[in-house]
Image (cartoon, rainbow, N blue to C red; front, side, top):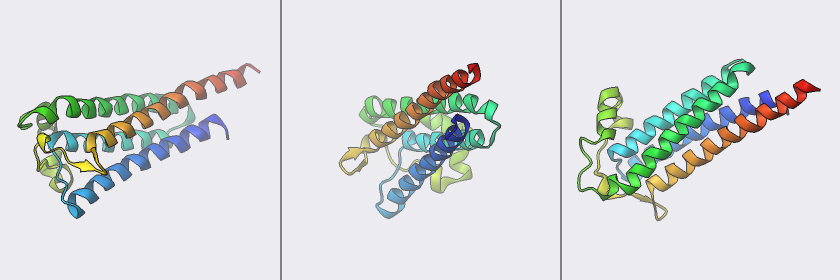
Length: 167
């Protein structure tokens, strides 16, 4: 498979995995009553943003795909930072209202536009768990995996193309 096709496929896979993560969060929210805190819904929004960036990258001409891989890497980094902050800071606070996550979500208006997906209905201290692990572990691990995939494709894909170009 040539590097451009591999990048396109990887960007599509990143988009699908991000949307699957949001779908899984919604399933556990409505089927198992695991309610999201402001940091959880911020991570949902970041997953949606990452899906949009990756999907746009997959649809772009080959020459622009590295740019969208870089944007995917940066967006995954934002998600990983949010998951890390949620675990080490927000989950230890008694209240997480009026936090940065709350202000970002209110500022974007996503909680008013689509409350079924983006409205926080729990406190960060509630620490919902999925299969024994806090949600931020799962989202943080997925952000790290997606960021690593984008990084590898950005570095390795570009190296292969330069090598082929020199021949």
